Image 1 (cartoon, rainbow, N blue to C red):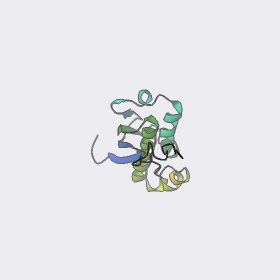
Image 2 (image 1 turned 45 degrees about the vertical axis):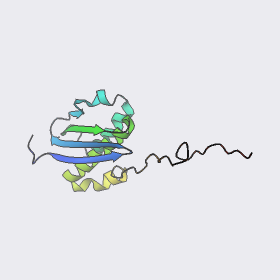
Image 3 (image 1 turned 30 degrees about the vertical axis):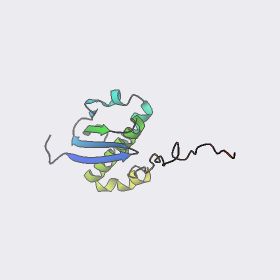
Image 4 (image 1 turned 135 degrees about the vertical axis):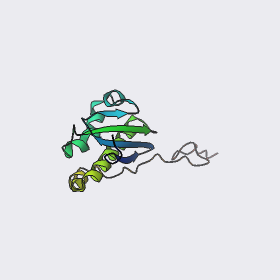
Length: 131
């Protein structure tokens, strides 16, 4: 693995952050030192992450090393998907159209709303007492 062939990309969703290293290889995906299937046991999450590779027709062309932290498993899966999409875009600029059509290059901006002072939650108020 040479640094000239390695592409580094970052993806985020909610509070999850994923950094990937994309290198030419045989399709091995490792997440935090574990196998991809072990880390994301749900088939829907696995398909969600592999979607950019399917669109680029490069399922078994690259080895992907992922470091992810923060958020939950779904947020991390979304962050990995965005990072893979961005890395493929660095590799081939012609993929911008197909990836954009599938909305794989858009960062999901939704975050948990902060708790406000003097309230029990973000939107909830303490019970009102008239008397």
